[in-house]
Length: 115
Image 1: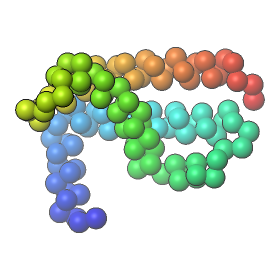
Image 2: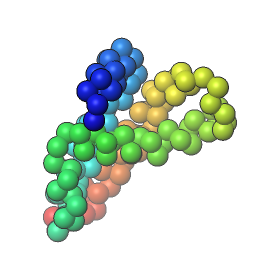
Image 3: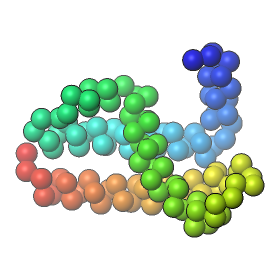
């Protein structure tokens, strides 16, 4: 990747608290999914070895929260994107709903899945 692009992206994430928070929470979420895959399944898929770095775990968490971001965005703003700040307005709600759902799913897996 271009180093100027990466520097610009890092400046944007650090300058916008909602994006920084979403990256940190996504990293934590990715760690939880990684832990579930390796702990509660007899033979983790070979592709799970790609999840052993922090970038991949963050991407996994971002994918998880993206599942909630899209319906919330469509419900609140419709299919139009007139303003770039619309997404940052719903990041908090998305993180709350996604984390709550992940907590319930993790608890159900821990309780009902035998080691």
